[in-house]
Amino acid sequence: MTSPSETLIELTGICKRFGGLAALSDVSLHIRRGEIYGLIGPNGAGKTTLFNVITGLYQLDAGTFNFAGRAYAHCKPHVLAQAGIARTFQNIRLFANMTTLENVMVGRHLRTHSGIWGALTRSPAAREEERVIAERAHQLLSYVGIRRPANTLAKNLSYGEQRRLEIARALATDPMLLALDEPAAGMNSTETESLKTLLQDIRSQGVTVLLIEHDVKLIMGLCDRVAVLDYGKKIAEGVPEQVRNDPAVISAYLGCGDD
Amino acid sequence: MRLHRLAKHYFAALGVALLALPFIVDAMFGHGWVRIADFALLYIMLALGLNIVVGYAGLLDLGYIAFFAVGAYTYALLGSPQFGLHWPMWAVLPLGALFACGFGVLLGAPTLRLRGDYLAIVTLGFGEIIRIFMNNLNAPVNITNGPQGISGIDPLRVADFSFGKAHEWFGVEFAAVHLHYYLFLAFTLLVIFVSLRLQHSRIGRAWMAIREDEVAASAMGINTRNVKLLAFAMGATFGGISGGLFAGFQGFVSPESFSLMESVMVLCMVVLGGMGNIAGVVLGGVLLVVLPEAFRHGAGPMQQALFGKTVVDPESLRMLMFGLALILVMLWRPAGLWPSAQRRRELMPDEAVAQQERDTVYDVSK
Ligand SMILES: Nc1ncnc2c1ncn2[C@@H]1O[C@H](COP(=O)(O)OP(=O)(O)OP(=O)(O)O)[C@@H](O)[C@H]1O
Ligand SMILES: [Mg+2]
Image (cartoon, rainbow over all chains, first blue to last red):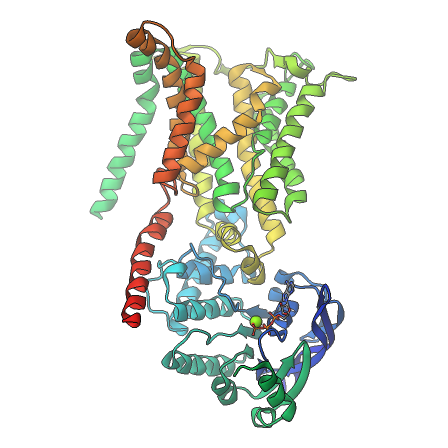
């Protein structure tokens, strides 16, 4: 079908400014199908901004953005989700007062079709669709390892569970690219370890993963390639070993004073 | 299985009670109160419509009464001596619903980017615009008759059967207010049915997702523009139906009936009863129609009995008590008198979780 080295997403010369601040300047990168691609950098480097650009939450100021062979600059978020980009959020954004099951079921929205008429008549087709949505949502919940009753409200889950619920919700959209913004933040080491296994399994299902993470060990153990952002610029890219020893990367992290 | 049987009995009893209600009320309190029951049903329909916009989709709409007005004026213009048109109810009611739906989309569209307070202010403005239009569309061409309103509106009628006249069956006399009660009850049940079906559907989930987090909802592939417009349209449709029934029942409409206060009243029913929960919204509608009326009838005589004269004007007292009741409910039951199961859960285990968290923090610090 597709060769492993085929490019899934290609960004060229991406710029995003907030007033006088260049959150992203001239960032170019490409991610291949089936890769786990890491995005690291000090706080405020522009990682989340890049996510917001590729998921349509921010409109880019300059540059081009191709996904699966089509140009997608200046598209609405739901168009990009439809195209096959799903994400999680750094500051968890679940539907707090909906159940875990409903959260994942919402993820199926864009792959299903029932409208008002289906809802009112409960036609066999609509009922069947609803059943399949729920079934798939149950599967995904157990796939990401949430063992609570399906009617638990999202806000009553533990932190680690909430992060995994976000992943389940994103997977429900049948993405080609899964973009995770610091999924291990706030997790303990056992949780991080099971997250790592989960991400490897997701990749083995053919989903490309883009990962923002501060946990260096996780990045090094998981990613095929890594890009480093600093002050909105890409300062390095390559296999984890190579990037780790890059003098520019070392000075960026040292200069920033953390990690 | 037993639970199922129990539920069946419960619904059967409820059904009988609802059918007998106008006669019981009539016997105990008189005709006037059956009329109030009719109004309660109209308001319940309105509140259920607004519940879709506010309770499900989380869009604070302060101009909702505009759609009631559109439905009412559609009926009034097409079924009264105003233009000499006397279209049948089965044509005018759906048309009013359709117009209201159209206005829902029309007024919803410019507000799509707004949230919270801003949305509330703009919808409030739109609501007033509609009312002011009705007030002023009497010149240069007289359409709405301006502030005088339109009178002589045709009664609600299906074929030869008019709801505006008393009928007698099996030796029992059904007055017009009784007949309207059954008609409105049927429409209310229909509106409840539609609300329930929508709530537990793909569309209902999308509305709630937008209510919870619009950004996340759009990132999950929900076309927030369309889904929000759908909420405005559905809510407005209910308002339009209720408005048409109101016009036919009342026989008279004027812009006065569609003031901001009415929008606020309907919103109070939704919030007080329990946003997002159909039973709560129905309860809110009943209480907010019946209690003020009871107060109006009771306050004067009571003061006479207690003080020998009327100390406070019953009308102002009514508003005072209304405000007080609102504040008390919001203090003690912030999720409404009858919140949805979800909201109840939301408040309960949350406490437990928070307590747990406090405990652990405490342990660590030790
Ligand atoms: N909506 C916005 N308006 C103004 N400035 C913004 C906005 N979003 C991001 N920024 C700024 O852009 C810069 C990059 O922010 P971004 O959130 O992308 O960093 P990050 O790499 O994700 O950092 P962290 O590791 O802390 O999450 C920061 O200086 C931030 O203040
Ligand atoms: Mg970030």
